[in-house]
Image 1: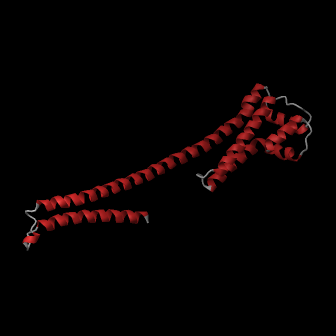
Image 2: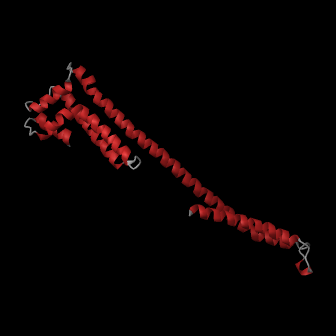
Image 3: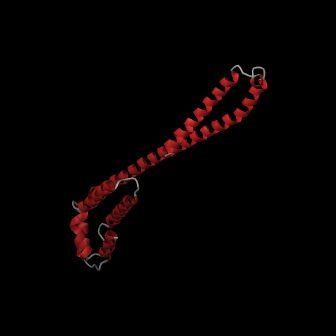
Length: 209
């Protein structure tokens, strides 16, 4: 519909311009009557020029406006494309950062506490429900941070208007697999158990909320 209107406008402008040239040609032909002889009447040409100049100016202004509107549309499309690309890059960057953070559980905290299986050791403390405070309190805080990242990225994916539903589901499945790689063996036990110790209750709240 818009393209049809645009072509109609262009056709009208071209027809108008052709009409002006035709009028000049007709007025310059030898007249059959002295009444219509315009060769000696230069004022008529000035009159025609005076009448057509404002019309041509208006047509020119309309064309400039139409051109400006098309440029604005093109700029919006380009801006939206840039934003879409940036949003997709942010989502994948957040996922990559979360993946690297999960690796730090053993790489950083295991070395810090000289523990070859620090996550399992920490989870056994939670499941045993015997400790008020963890031997690896900084790890407890880090795992809560990881969980917050996981929830934030999943919620951002759900409201994302750029990625397709298939792309969203693929990324969410990758998140679930990443989370399950570290916590699948403990998750069901923690979810079903009723804990009494401060450590176990806090961790259960962190990991389930």
